[in-house]
Image (cartoon, rainbow, N blue to C red):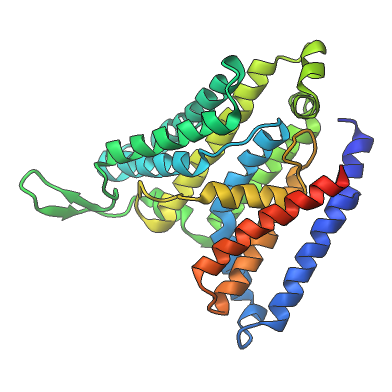
Length: 330
């Protein structure tokens, strides 16, 4: 992708459309402010913290979708990472560094397996990642015994012994800058910047766009399709692991049931921002718009006591509307 084309994507119609959508959501929030709740800084601070895990998943989803694929396993891989990190640090007492590396490598491995199945065996990404979704969830339940990994550790005699929360959990769950910024929000920012560098400043990013735009042409151009797809899905798995670690720190436990339907939110955030499901176009900047649009919309509905069932229905509707807008642009 050339510099001129990159600037066109950033400053062009998709970004304008996403910016206008975010502005519209803000106007709705100002109108339906729930007795001034939306107008308070604390509401926005808490919102950024709440959407951070979804946003981290969306970073990995952006890479996969740009390559022309899809990843339905992000919620399950996140749950597996949350369980493993909690198990390593709370129950096993591993040093934080080793636990982080082991968890992140596990997430990356899950993604690389999905990418390998897609690229080497030519199985559709929908099927391959759905299989990983089921498999990773099963592994999470297996290693946790179907229970939450918390500070309550059951002894052989059936009595529960409580241990202290690891220091790493406190650090990841902390707020900085006078309690105005959550650590997990800072981690999301690092993930976004990392994706931006990969997509806009490296040959890897240019190859990813080429594969998503026209895989056959990319193959004739000598781009290593298998290696690129494995790396894209592997990075998605890595981001899932980071999200799982943050999720465990926020909940002070590893829940094998967490992350159900998170893939829908991640896809919605990527698509509503303007990244095409056909692959080959989009940026992480557009995904940031999508993260904020979905996050603020759900926050506005939440502070106005709108039920979860309505919020889920709206998420599905948003995905369809965004896809229809993309079809009109083609």
